[in-house]
Amino acid sequence: SSINVMRQVKAALQEVEQNIESYAETHIFMATLFKFQNVVYNTYVINNPHVKYFNYPDGNDSILLRGMGKKKKVTILVKSVLANLCGIKYRYQPTFAKDRIGITLADKVYTFFPDLMDFYTGEIQTLQLPSVTYLQKETLCVFLGMPVTDLAIKDWCTLAQTAAQFIANHNKKLLLVYKPHPREDLTMMYPIFKRYGFQLWSELGYNQDSIEKIVCEGLQPRRVYSWCSSALINLKLMLHGHIECYAYKGLELIDAGPKAKQKLAIIYERVGIKQIQ
Image (tube, rainbow, N blue to C red; front, top):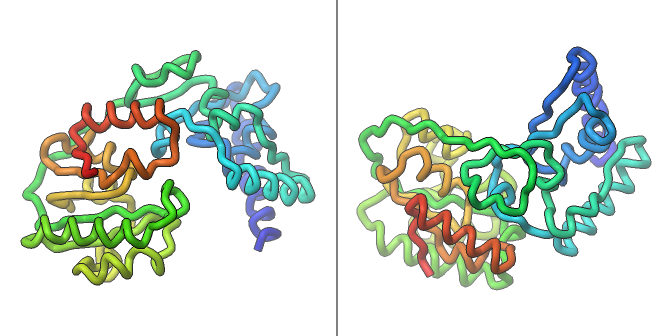
């Protein structure tokens, strides 16, 4: 329930506060200010020169400057009311209108693509993912699912059918596996993929960690497809030409403006992600 969530937030805030009090200066690494981190920012970072907010890459939002739509604004309003009734400082930041994760509020930004962070004027630290040792390719073709609510499309049923059929036809000699997003509703797209021979990742007994961690531990699919999951970018940065990654109508489906989509196209070309239109 919402009350239990608020209790968990309060307990977590106490832990954060204890750590802050133990040091003369504290650097808090957060990927977004939309979720629990919003409370941390408003409680400990604002007007506190001894606490710094550092942003680290976690998903497409860390690369693309995207505003906040009506749905997220309503979500924040509800969260704000519930949180403040419980004495927790959850706020809608004015910057969210154009920057929905609050990256421009960071004291420092860590990124894989510093040349594309032209919207940020603060300190930038360039990151580089360590190359993963290339092993024998598994006979796996993996589709990385995403929550339907994250996609800019209404007819997701037709989309799933055309994608599943296309991938199945082009990978007849590989084991087709569907790995859902943690927030994904499995009653929506997966049953459609199942009709075309895709098996569920968990039913095959594979590790439930992120695909990036799984690849580091040695299970390396031959091909990975998705709509516009940022995991495609991470996998290419880790395995380079040793893994094939495909974005199925990715630029069409991502909820972003023309400039953001142009940057994503640049990244796809740079790291070697093939687009399927």
